[in-house]
Length: 112
Image (tube, rainbow, N blue to C red; front, side):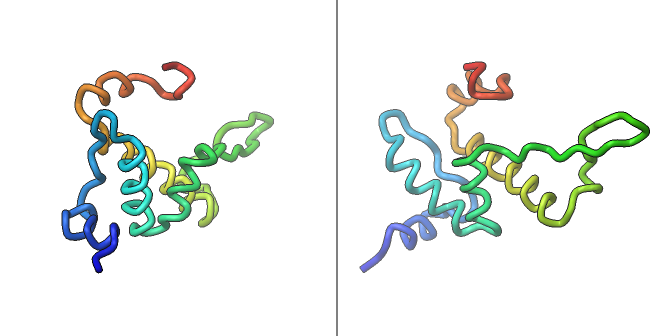
């Protein structure tokens, strides 16, 4: 018997995130979770979605506190930052053009 994950792979879900269809959010969410779990650092990508993005670490230089630059992040922080980007990209790529147009100009969901 073929599993949902097997069907997703046969349909090419390993190449592109599944597209959200109207009134099909629950199934899209399940397939999207499978898609992300089958990617590198899949659990961390899903945690970025569930728990929110990394709170960017700061550093103090000359009495001024500023966010760390990417190259200054620890290995773990860099992986988490990369997973945040992957999570955001996967979701945006799975949106139909008309939905993407509505959300693309907003940085945080509270703005919607």
